[in-house]
Image 1: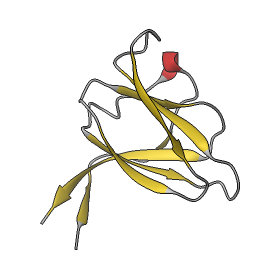
Image 2: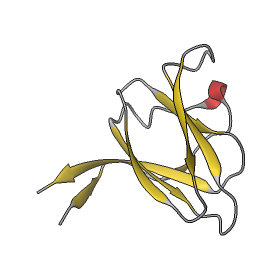
Image 3: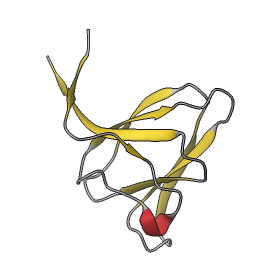
Image 4: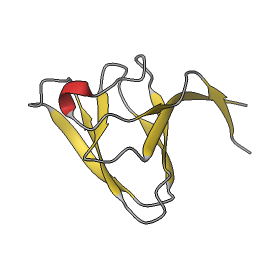
Length: 92
């Protein structure tokens, strides 16, 4: 059984690279798409400048994922306010 260690307050994931967040330099972020019907594209970038995208993935409606990233990498979604995230860790 995996247990999650909450390391920060849940926030709405920003909608632009300029507002993207590192979740206080977290290495693991729990993302939840609370929409009942709309998937969102999550982008991970090296910085807020917009020229260093690491990658993207789809977070389907109702889906939860744990994202592992470098501490200074930032995260944003392509639209909406239905994706929230919180810094997390793992414990045993």
